Amino acid sequence: MLVQWIFSISFMSLLAIFLASAIGWRVKGFDFFPPPSKDSWQYHTFWILFRIMFGGLLLLSFLDFDPKPFFGPTDRYAIWLPLMLVGFGGATYLSAKLGWDNAHGEEAGLVVSGPYCWSRNPIYVTSLLGMLGWALFVNSVYVTAILSLWALLYILAPFVEESWLERTYGDQFIEYKRSTSRFIGFSTSQSRSQSKRKERR
Image 1 (cartoon, helix red, strand yellow):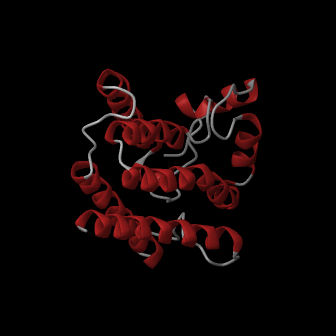
Image 2 (spheres, one colour):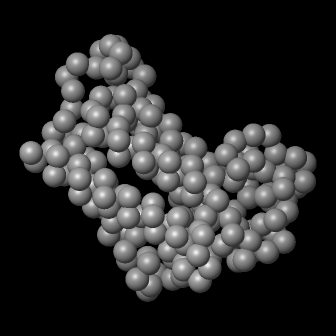
């Protein structure tokens, strides 16, 4: 019963983020993410819901951990655990490179260098790898359901964010968008020369 309650609260918190972001994407004048500012109700609501979701996910990973691995004990510790750690470790590093203000949806300068030459959203790409490793390591239906919705949110998030980025950075982002893949790919020489420009910090 406890596991089901934790799952329900965690899943519904993430679903609320998903629906509010979808409304913000489709309804003009309703900005949920990126939030208008750190003082906005959108910013505080997003992080409260996200922390509830993430805390529940951690609890479920402990309480509903399946001793029987999905594939085999070797795969669990040799592949899926390292994938989880590398994925989320990479996302943390990339968030720091992007800048915590940018990562939290504030206007702090468009970053186009390093990994951002090859993907407009490398944080999401590495996080998705981490989620795959997490789901297969824990082998829980509840954990997998939450991670699946979280992964879907990260796949759709760039579409929500790009309209904000275009409004905020204008031609600079449009040029970057034309030359760099949304998720992963080879960037054009235009992008590489752009990455050498001085970035606003």
